[in-house]
Image (tube, rainbow, N blue to C red; front, side, top):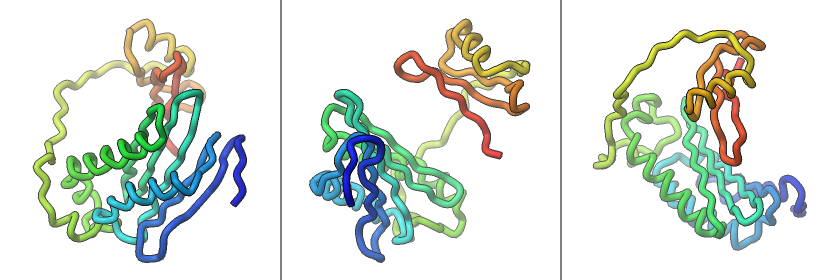
Length: 194
């Protein structure tokens, strides 16, 4: 497993067959043994929620002073995801595990309802009650005409409205899309998969 400072530095799958599979990759960072061990230890705490065949995808990246970890856990019908950034990768690793655990506790009933058979979840997690399970409440509904426009025009319209996102009908793809404001004065485009 060589490392390369440009692009993905390492792809590593860890642990044995009766544990969750953790796939770690690094972008502009060497995935050291210390980082691997920290990730295994921290994310290993999540094993009480997931079955052994669950895959946890971890991406570490560094841009300037920002040390970011992204964790994605695909489960049948849903994706559990968290991303944390700090100036210390070990702090980011600690934070990301806490956020995922909080998400699992908060949305347990919703996740279990989507996965009637339990699928990727441990029976002990499915049976346990958590105080943090709250009802998702939609407090306002807006209706508006969706006009065909190009993504760049949608970004301009979003800025004129002072919003951080804008739903529009994409004139190029004939689909409903969303543009949104990102950090660094850039924009993102969300399109449905075909």
